[in-house]
Length: 548
Image (tube, rainbow, N blue to C red):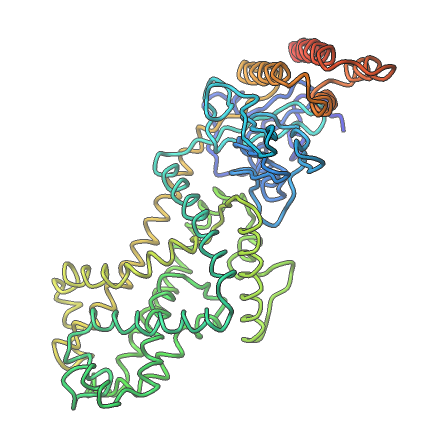
């Protein structure tokens, strides 16, 4: 593919003055929005961004990362951006050294066996920094790809706010911790015991939430146990029925359904989260004698109204910024992500949805256990949902006490649908939980818009720029130092030298290398010196081509 027209974008095939529609604001200097490679390819900055996003989804893009070689296993901390796509291009597992990656941009550790047969980690190559990065200290959120025509490096520098960096760090830490937690659960527990543990936890958790959010008198009305002073008294007299147990276990689900928004198009799933409370309305008869068994439905309608408000008002704004910021997905693709459609298949029945959900979670956990990495997606991570769901009742009670009870309009409305002040307090606490979730959603939208405004400062570095030249110089220096530290008495060093020659020398100098090593067996010392000379020559020729 060779495009000779300097005013034609190789991605969108439009002229230089006709960039595609993008959220990225144009720069004051039009030349900054026109990316030139050392070959004939030219592209709009917005097109490069979409190209990077597409490669990110395909798994063909790498972040600057720390790669650790350990007993024939590779553990990329930030390498893979899509957990469905493994392995990475450039990695293999031939022997204890492995093949060196074509993207040598990090500090490498090799595992070497000592005299006693034990493996010890020895730093053989890298700079003084913890990560081998260019001296301009490229952020770990920057992406590395290459020109499809001349294979020259392209570095996309992603600007990120301090809040975004903190959030990413917390996300990664919790994701790695959850990997081991889930792994221990899967190894040490059978399915039946896990289900029993979850069910028991939800029952006692719901019991605790109900005790916290409802006054004692309202609590006994809700349970239809007004003849008893406390729940312990009712428990001692065997007055608690299976419907009470179902109620306790449903309350955490109800709070989760508030916290985790389900698209309005998935009405079946949305209805499922409300059915337990609608069926249990008979348990709540005594809470509102003005409107028998209706006030519970009001709470369900509050959450449904909240979802409608989110779907029609907030979600279009949120998806416009947040989805584009994360993956650059189209509207159809983001719809599929939200609705859980994988490979064009959408389960219809409730049981099909249930089995698909279980299968997806099993695959997700399996990938987390097999590979040490994390990924970013539009959905909240599991740890964040758990924390939010645990904190939601406390925040809801606080919000109701601090704000809702001070509003005469809300206070009058709640008093109309309840019988006593204690009942009104309980309904107000539930409404407070909904308000807290709404505030969380609005804050996510504001954060996404803020991150998008920062993205206008993103930069793209191509071959020939001082940034790339400095980056390549440090890479070559690191490779030379790596070769110098190879053990001359270890025959395995020859394999490492040959692998480096194959991957880092240009075609011209690789042929010279083959001519040098093919006729006779060369000592490791001579091979090291020859490889170092050819690496320097290859680097010099590459820079001369870039200047041309």
